[in-house]
Length: 210
Image (cartoon, rainbow, N blue to C red; front, side, top):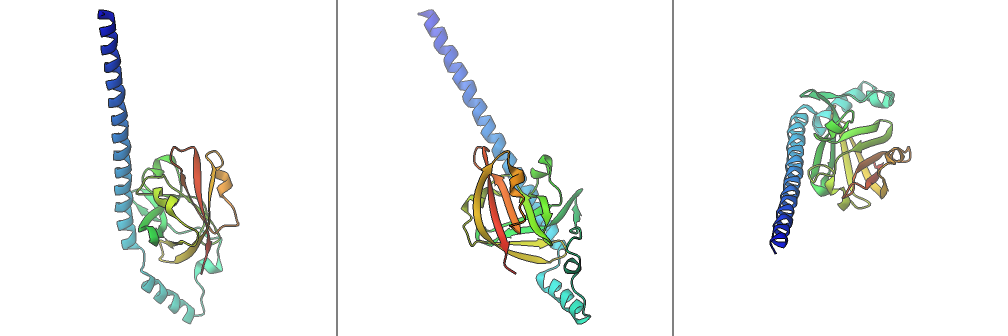
């Protein structure tokens, strides 16, 4: 009887330890997501203060047209996208999905540490098309992409205030190891994030509307 009692106590202790570990993991993930959301929110606030408004940008382009000049990215679509440095990181602009109330800064280059802060450009340019943006599925980053429907409007504004409008054409699920398949000249913009559990990736494919 004493052995059974000791075994029961050991099982209860082990179960309690496992439960505590699970709670700690959940707490860590929630804290990580909260931190990522606050980091992106802070950068977005700084970046939006530095990006010209649409009215300011239109005035600039109207003035250029009066001088028979086209915007530089139209004359040279292969040019590098301009960047804005904020706290040691370079950003190319802001991606917006109005129907989700989502507005996020986009880093110029991607890496796993950078994805902890904000969505990152994986490939391409808004000027030539085939712009691919990746982000974690944090609720504060691309976690809401699962709610996107065909026809949803997506906007991208570069750091010079030039805005590009897109419409979601299709939503695909791709293998986690096949992220290279997300890069396709067929689509002007692709947004990518992990699905729940991280076994696959969600790819939102968009075409320009302007």
